[in-house]
Image 1 (cartoon, rainbow, N blue to C red):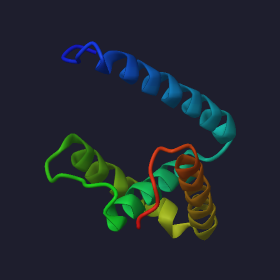
Image 2 (tube, rainbow, N blue to C red):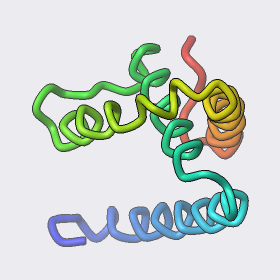
Image 3 (cartoon, helix red, strand yellow):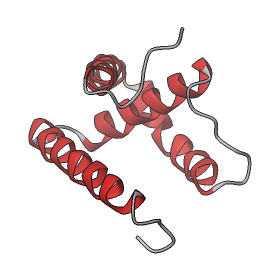
Length: 108
């Protein structure tokens, strides 16, 4: 956590622990599920956050480059109606969970 002030480091550590707990819970839920479904669910969340203005993908940023690389890889999953519907349902579930846990608020 270099480059942080003494007051920022404890806050960052607390946030990191909170994210670790959430990730552990989500990975338990994901166990046995199709990787395509989960990847597609995450892409749907990122797309929806971007479309609502809650997430800004700065052109050329690492996140933007990763998204541009990641999205085309999921085209086959989008063509599978069962995976698409399941991923959309899971994306809603995850987004509701993230909202409930305070990671972001719904657009006003």
